[in-house]
Length: 324
Ligand code: DGY
Image (cartoon, rainbow, N blue to C red; front, side, top):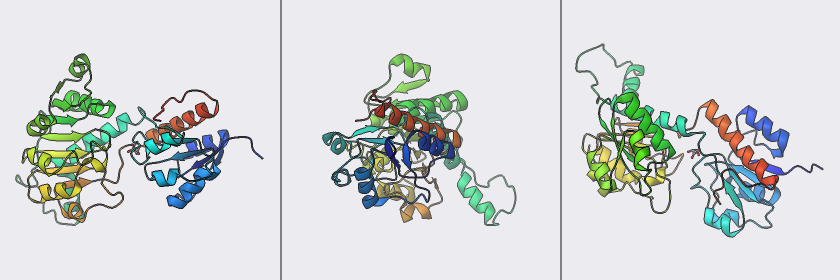
């Protein structure tokens, strides 16, 4: 019998991370990468000392009520944790950790990717070319929107938003405005070339591109509803690399169909992996399958950070990234 803590790893992880997990723990790896589902998650909570989970595991209050529970830590692979009922975890004395910092650059890069793709009609252009529809260069073909020098509005000004601000301002000469109920100091904002706005509505009215970077909480659910989408300019674009819940997807489809806004670049969706049919049918949207942190380097770092939290926990030390 192994005295090492038993850790259920809910999905496949990069090879180096799985090797490190197997070295340091009695790791129960998920070789076929099928989501465990509610029953599998309950079984993991009953049989393991910790669960290394991901955004694809819905850890609801019901699942966390599995008894008799052996697990004492949910080490989340990812910074966002809205798939975990943190209050229920807390109430049951279950610790929760996440992996901030290490995915900031990758996610900021992806926000810029979406922004550029939708503005320059890159997805549409690629579909056009692959379909054999391209008849050759002409001055009026697929004209998009200039990005350089435009105004970027950031909703939320945490780590990822700041990294986007740096790229947009430093790399593309964009004017950056933002709204955050807990804004950074004026010095930090100035160093990023970013101007605060008291009201979210002012960001929405003034920006050519609105990029969402707030956490998904009950307060931010459907933050971008019909009324707020209507405040955006008709030539403005919405970018979402945060969480699908922050946008009312049905209202967004309507806004895009009616050209109430010019377009959207989306990496996250309300009911992943389901995507609203209306979005799939539109040309003025770029849709990616939740790739924000999906670089090899970042995914390895996320895994190592989750393992670091596990090691600290079982050594009786404070977690580096405690959420609950
Ligand atoms: C994150 O880290 O929050 C990513 O979206 C994957 O969960």
